Image (tube, rainbow, N blue to C red; front, side, top):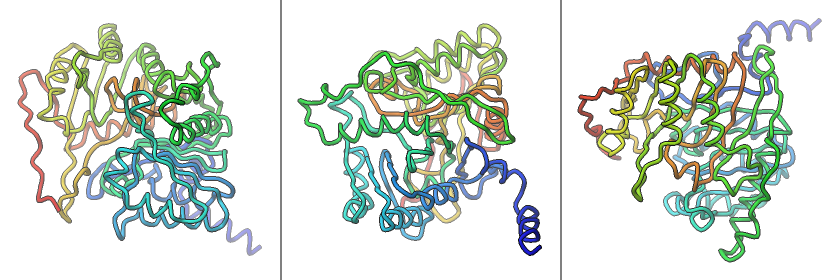
Length: 407
């Protein structure tokens, strides 16, 4: 009787939506900048999900991140504590970070590398494909994966708008694990031996059928970049995104930190934009959110031209500064997600420019399922309808944002 009463009390105290999320094989996870109106009460925050996954690790924890940055007293400090605790209890921890960003943020990486049971490697993706290691993911026990826009950065838990996915699937974990294992080898290979590690091409696209919140069955396809350095060539990010956009019938929403068709080396990259324009021409209603970090950059003219086309609306969003003071590289919309018809979506680690898909390591997933896609549409609409949005027009003048005192 006491056990029954405890169970009844548990289900009364914990919201039903939380049960459906935690019982699902795939779950949307968000980070919300404090002091904003963007929170979605039925979506779990990144911090408790990361804690739950890392504390649940029994055998292995493979982490691949752009960089690792901590601040004393932050929520992320507790994440690091649990990584140390995992290694202490015998979990094999492997960590990969981008070699160039390591030079900017060496502190936490060095501390982790000195701990018994934790092995760290730095990967320079320049000699490999010309870009960077920009992916943000980790794998627990070869059974579940976290993929999203969240860097391993204290700001990503408290001061940046982020979206990610927790995926419980041996099939997806295996596909992502192949990429991790490849990068683990690349990180210690000499430049002369890189081509010996290039994956064989021609594999069939990987996918899994998983249970979403509420019991909906969804199809999940992992995607990777860059082409030529992915285990499954049919699962290339750019190809998957273009196919998603081409399949849109009524609506298309896109959200990136940055969006540019202009390349630093000159020339243009219009593969995805061409697909967006084609969708608009056939009557699809297109809305795009880009962070206000783009203001003052050459990308603005391209955004203004895109926004001037029929059926296309483009907007900047500006997250207000924190009341506690200025925080560098924060208070921004950092999500990387595309939703078609509130039925299918791509969510990943790439912003929009050629280098993310052709020269840098990135990951994502394409998911088909009304429940999850519909929820992402609601999240997009909350940003779109928020006071932080500024619609882009052809005649608009968009000056770089003025920041507070840098501390």
